[in-house]
Length: 496
Image (cartoon, rainbow, N blue to C red; front, side):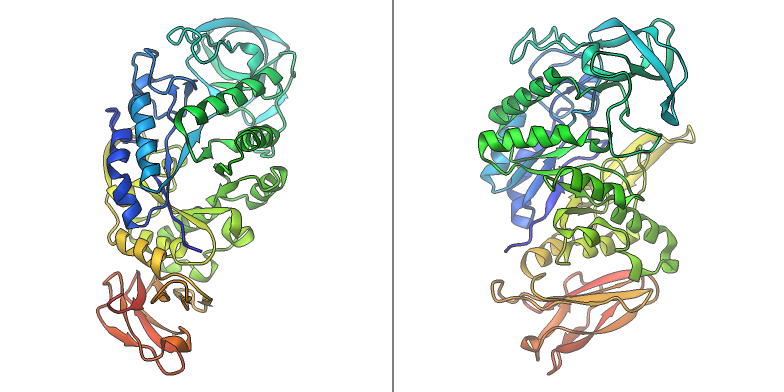
């Protein structure tokens, strides 16, 4: 088996100039050559902010940058044809291409409707604080720019379970829509705020069978139109898990394809609810390892006070390794974003070593660690901040080690709070494979570790160039490997 690596090919502040799809098309062969195997692309459909929308404010799922809606034809990332061409180029380069799917909510409705609702307590959505009242809600989507092409389905208030704005009084609150499919919220696993069905905008009601059928039809159209390999599912903890069970089974059954799927169930401090979701969906999808990302964040802030022996505690990759997509950062955790939990720059190489060189997990690299970024945005303090995220050093070396060396038996040396290590002994399938990794969040250190007697007498060097010494493996297959202060070294066969 070959080690696979995913890349999130965007960040929140990528320029809204319509260039991303062409950027990916032009980069796809290089990405494959440096060791990327799959790419997660951002939402391709038109959002309510038109050409400025990152795509998480779904307006028209059928508009992939084809119709003049919300002030533009193209999306933030380009046109429909550019999207199709980018996927084709990626697949021709040997990449698997995953599309970001946002089916929890919609925004930017074309018409208002008079809707019966009950107001709820934001911190406890199960507590209603009004009798049924009528409001004017933006819940009717007719998509005049598309004019019925691909689908004539009209979304109205019967398709939604909640909204957050009354256009009549201009009041912002959370309103539970009283429709024929339910007078309260849908059942979701996450019990934050009492019931976390409602996240934002017009919340889609999956109790409506016409909605479920329309989204299945859309899934068929989307796959047949663009030829995607799999999905990244947005905001799944706010949705009834039964919907995606039905949706994925339908597509997988109809096309007899795996459609690799990873869901965003972002619960950094609630592993048990993530495991409950895996059970409720009967292991149909992987999940991002939010708890591990939180551990990385904590370790990067606490410096030498963090006990590295605990870095995998309460993580998904520890509890359910075969369904864990491990990551260091994403578009939500980057600075100034909604779930900001940014891993400090000094710790990023250490974190990447922990996801790329171990036997468990499917690692996902973040766009800025490969390309860097600069942007300005307003923080929670109301002030403008200029952010620079530098490209991480030695990314190609990390990817080379994962693709060619990080195989075989894993021997762990998690025996010191500030200096940990492990070895991969290599296997016969991958020539010259095997590596030793040492990580320190304190002083420089050494770690005596076993590489396997098959490596006796071989000379190892640090592939990251952080330590310039050469190390010869002893007759018993062991050696003492070095690491610098607050650093990582990745030792492998010289001249590989």
